[in-house]
Image (cartoon, rainbow, N blue to C red; front, side, top):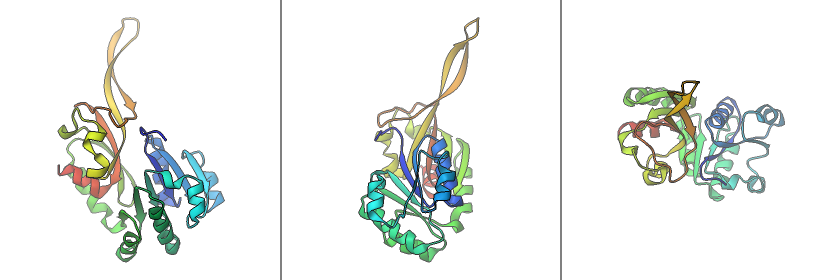
Length: 232
């Protein structure tokens, strides 16, 4: 698979999962949407890279459809907590590098963390974290709420990012954030007079792409991770 586009699975396409999968796809990620309802999968086909109907508690089915090869898996199963637990556990045993799981309360969050979730999404913390991000990021250009505790942000590249690549910054390891795209202001000639104008171009960065001072970076991650970036 390409290193330039994050490969993300969203398992459980309820309101949270569907909106998250759709927004990540629009932002440039390769998204596999997974649900055990064929009707939901039919609705999702035009909104994600690949929509698959399967039982996420079936290890062989997960492996057969390449769920063991994704960069991030988001488990958004809300109605069947037992299925959420088993899904997280299987994804961990399959070696998925990062697992995000939605939980309805702290107790369930603790259980999901114990079986392998790296990050647990808790609705109660959502509003406070999001407002902290808005207030603490002075270069914030836009923020899209993806669901409980996760957001997509566009911000002018912090000074610490200048002339460095995603690999050098170790964004996933250090900040637990995924760099989805870079918006770069470039000059272009147009019209009969060959007049110069400035327009933004969007590029999907690879491991070695250098981030320039005037770039706008588009990042996806938990509100907690975005807030941590604000404190750097």
